[in-house]
Image 1 (cartoon, rainbow, N blue to C red):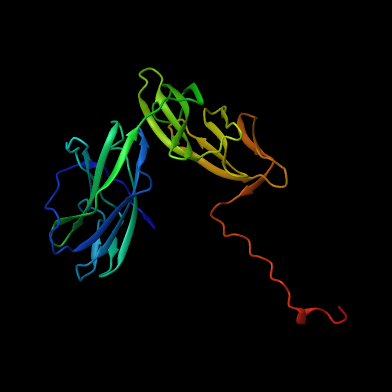
Image 2: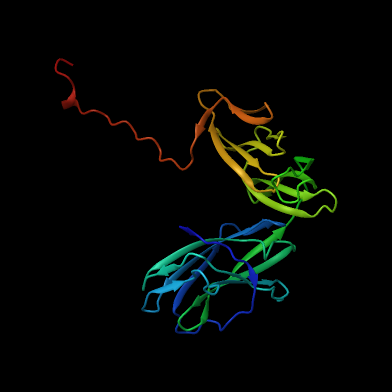
Length: 290
């Protein structure tokens, strides 16, 4: 799966897709409910039906992907256009899936229900072809687990400014989600809102700020699986690692020496393949005499 370089800008839509579409385009969202200020992650699948290879993007090329967002009242927001420095080639008849994080030029600042479509440029004709419509809901809630001020250290934008780390527990249908948020201490404006992951509240999350003003959050993400997330003063996740509760050795977060480290448990890689099952030996393979 490729990840696009995001070049966010406002622009006007070109011609819409026609009945003889050059593409079959499908838009999905990784989820449909977002907190205020949270980036929207979308997946756009493009099937090239033009009969020829298509090259999208590349250095100096025009932006080829546009997201059109409409409020429930029918008012359209300024479209978000996205391009890529690296060209994307879609062979004739082939499909290509792109995962795009929509932020910067557009953020989920307004509450309510919205609809979204993706428009994909066909560079030969100059037309945009429209995807299906998806809906999303923007809601908000206040910090309810952690709220502490900190100063932005040197090496980060706006060094010296007063900020606040906030941790939010949010229920989405039958799932509890844990969010980190950085706000401006003076104005209260939301600067970043990021999903840390699902959480099981059998044990209370451990939350601390280290000597470099990085936020450490340690929580139970799945049964017997714990997540250690470190958030930078700019609100971005610096590191995310996982640990397994192994044979009664329960991991926990220890703040010492100006930083945080996990003690106990066993490091766990969620992307690693499961261990191979041991094969049973056949009776014919047994040593003689057994």
